[in-house]
Image 1 (tube, helix red, strand yellow):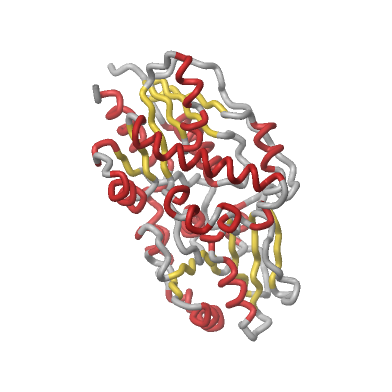
Image 2: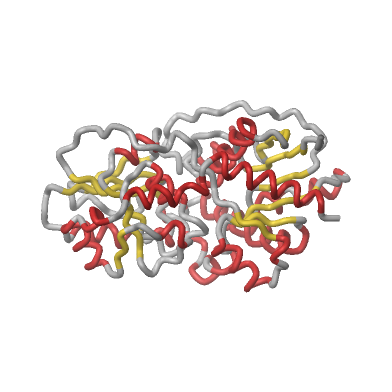
Amino acid sequence: MKRKINLLLVSVSFSPESGLGLVEHGVRLYKGLKKYSKEVNVQARSLFGDKIFYAINKKMRNKYPVKIETMDKKRNKPDIIHYLSPGIFMSNSVIRLFSNEKAKQVVTIHDLDAIKKVPKIGVNNYINKELSKGPMKIVNRFLNYMENRGIYLTVKKADHILCVSDLTKNDLIETFHVNPNRISVIYNVIGKEFRKTKKKSNKKIVIGHLSSYAYNKNVEVLINAFKKVKSDKFELHLYGASMPFDISDDKRIKYFGHAEDTVKMYNSFDVFAFPSKWEGFGMPVMEAKSCMVPVITYKNGQLPDVVKRNTCQFKTEEDLTEIIEKMAWKKIDIKAAYSDTKECREEYVIKKSEEMYRKVLEVK
């Protein structure tokens, strides 16, 4: 009988209501391994501690109350340490120098934005402008630096790299000529709570959006396109980080801040709009599909095929206005869209993760 693998997950936080995809993915992976894995003993460690993390992240949270989940932090000697981003791997590199740590190192890379996109755009132009004022400018520059250096360190030092899509894997191979055998592709986890529920009655047709409002999210196009819609039967509901755009001139556009219940939020939408220019993966689309909510995406957006397919796609701002007015999303095969999410389901992701961890330990 095989001995169980001692695994340590390391992230900036393991609090389930962070509002950050990176953190929420870590929470879901941890819970999934605890629930389904027969091969892995998993522990979790927050890099900075949840209270410090939320002191930094308070503005993004839009001052909603924070629930901190107590994780099992007893430190068994790990066989594998899995860092959930290159920046976290970089942050922990100094500690590793003095710890005589012999565990295998696995690092998740979501995208290469920190080295390919951000330097061209500028950190403070890339980040949501409401989150790049005052001291946050320094924080953003530091975090981007850590992520940037962390990618180079990952390519050089990590025993294995986990990419969240083939898009990121191919980008990594093309940019750094990484041996494909060092890379696994496993999609992010969708929890079982993401499902279709009974919709709350709403006389309006609701177009919904959830994001950080960073440069790549392309939300200004969505807002401008919606403002050109003439009918009052539509509303645009915006959730997520602090709102950087002026929406005061259109009463049909409503901003709700952080979504405390994302499942309820998705199910309140008639359609979910995701106009991103690029994403490492695009988890909100898969969550919406899992709730059987139709999705609108940007045709020229760099998104993985599994995310982009079975969506209603627009090319221009005018095109998006027309899609909304004609409710073109009703032509989507919603059952086919739902089937796209099967490789994000907990049991599937945990099985693939177990296979990856075994593979990492077998490599000498």
